[in-house]
Amino acid sequence: MGSTALTIDLGHMRNTKAQLQFVIDAAAHSAVLQLDGSVDGPAYAVEEAVRMSAVNGIFGESVGLDSTDITLGYWDDESREFSEATFADPLADAIRIETRQSIRPVAVAQVFLGGDGTVEVTAVSIAHQVSGDRGTSESGDLGVENGHVDFDGIPADLGE
Image (cartoon, helix red, strand yellow):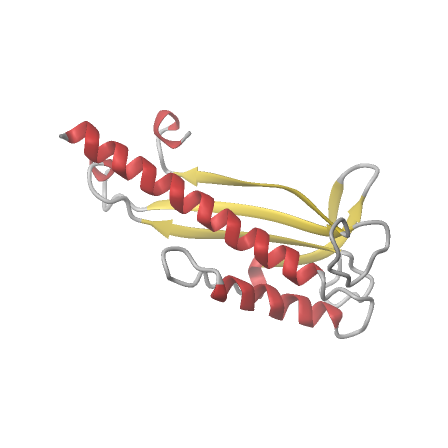
């Protein structure tokens, strides 16, 4: 019985992890389309990321991004690296979103985690425009670097 409950908990945590990644990937992809080189582009991009995170929630609840989770910047195709821009730079061509969410396992994992069993899940996504294609939504105009999600506070053999 205990192993079944632990399996359910781990499945719940992995599902939450995947859903969080989906939400911020969608937010980053949608937001980077707003970076059109205009003065208002950066503000629209942040607004769009926040909006998309509210629309695409986890188990029906909003992820609740705010501007501190969102970084505008530049993508270097050669080095495949993101560098941070000043917040309102209209020349920014990439966006990085990093957020942390607290989840509470269903039952048995709380025994292994101690305390109330709350686990922090972190997700990161970078979306960028490709070779100067600004503000377009046709297939192939956006790039995404594989986002990753980490569990904090879970013993390594339980988290992965």
